[in-house]
Length: 385
Image (cartoon, rainbow, N blue to C red; front, side, top):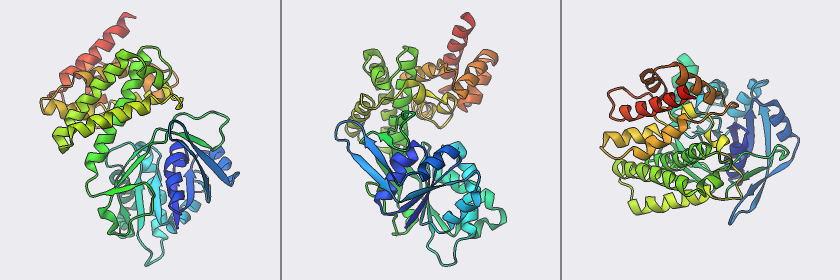
């Protein structure tokens, strides 16, 4: 069995690639980073280190890497004979992956089993997005080529912090992971991924993860950055920050109960588990890394505005979530392109235009006034400085 995984970064090697290896797949990593591809091909194995209570080391073998920037044709050949294709490239990069998958599907042998495609991204419906990009890239051949694959949305969860510069291709991760996969698309021929669980309805899993893990992680980063704290674990050691993050997640849990009928007690335990994961001192993770790309994180269907809009529509509290958005607007990291862009826009755009453009909220939406006021507050502070 063979799996082609787009994105050979830390998540690709330390989470998706590891589980594919444990499922018996030969793993072919595809990436555009020359040095990373060369480094992977220079070794016969790499180690995934689980840092924290219960952690162990896992040695990964049976892999290689192909440079999709310099040799996309070779990647297409790999896709043509693969059983599984996965991605961990970021939702905005899926459109660049699609043409290579199209080329691979076009070369797929007649009668071959359908290619099993799963986008493992921090976004709702990421595989649907990838499928749409594949359909667009395929043009008039879309119907025929799409019939050669099946597509399943997934929800993935594992904290993979920034890695030491001299770490090679080894990866340090937390012991905890979750990989939920839609089962219906496979028609009973499920991919062999140890530890993954297959569900009929993915929406509760992916929104629970996005609105708890991702919302909580980013909120911790932005409140921590505001306080001048470097590490995520240290930020949650601050009682005020811990209280703000907890309040934020209580609001997202209320949305999940209202939307999906999830059990409040189980959600409370889930929140507790998540916060303990963030407190893991063995994971040296920084607020700057977790907080990067703030414009994406305050966009319409992401970890703050998404649940806050749902809460506002139901008359539920959004005070803590809007407070997290306020902290996100203060995130000023000169080495992060989106942070620089956001701070410049806050200085030059009026509050209404900025709020509409960055959050995707309609001015008539019940959440809009509170977010606009948060924008105004940040603009006032910038003008006074």
